[in-house]
Length: 338
Image (cartoon, rainbow, N blue to C red; front, side):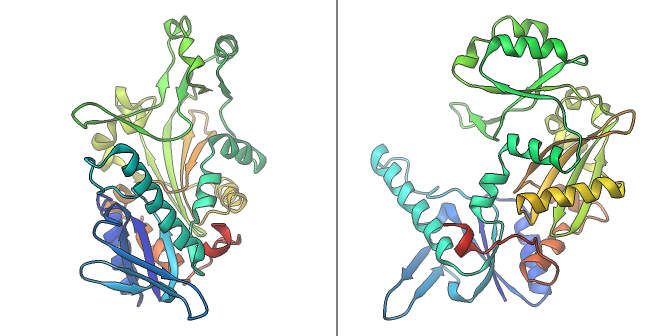
């Protein structure tokens, strides 16, 4: 069995961990760093009466993609090494063709995919997540998405414990020196409500502030559930968004036993979203309520594996190699990517 891993060269150690697990289980793994295509990786796809050809070759390895039995869609940076010095319009066209080439190839492959890009994009919609979570019986924060300042102020008055704002999709902002800044969930102060003119340019998501006893990161792979807890309230900057102190908290995650009812509802959520992988954020309130915040269809997990009881790479390898149950939905590249 051969697994194709779609990623980029700056991805973290989770790629090596999963590749090692695949090999230990008798499979083969080929890493496709999308930022190295088309500059350093060669791709050939040929269709017609003479038979199909689908190959991918790096400097030291070549794989016949017709032998691939599973694909792990992890990360992309299409054409990342195409020179920045190239004329802007030509570079944009090159990156576009590079993206179309790779996604077209994936669409033509008849292999299991964890998870197909259209499924990831669909499941990544925060509004869909909240509605679906509520439908399967999970509690969610009261949430508002709008570009209307008056509606925001009214909503803020209804949030007894305060209000936070967050983005509906993840992105980073880079300064002139290339330093990255991540946009975190942020508490709204009364003064922030006085000038909401920026909503004319960018709608926002607002949620009631949920009191926290601790927070959970629940990683689901197939039907295996890995729950970890963190005391996000132990550090001031982590109280609203623990990622602000992610490095400081990395050693403080603990294995957590989810109530059976909550675990069942999360698995139903995965069924509804057709996901074989998801990283879920949950708040546990001081009165022991479990509040679903969001699910990331390609969320990180590498830092959890330094702790006992989080064999996530091993679980991913099992799903990719077909050694355990897969999500019931249709997750073949060829059919889902069209």
